Length: 87
Image: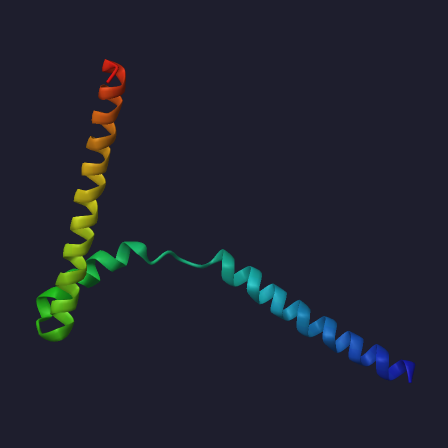
């Protein structure tokens, strides 16, 4: 009976150990894919068809978000100037 428990415990420890080792090794060698997205959208935009249209729409949304962020920064600057003037 104790031999069976020891055997199951050892097998469980080996499985957990192998999983843990794989997780640690996998997380150390993981690469970021953010830099590849821009080129992919440009290629898809040139492809035409529905995929190209969606890619162009996505690119324009990113550009609009950049413009909105810039406008928000300008608005914050104006609010700081207005507060400094005392209004």
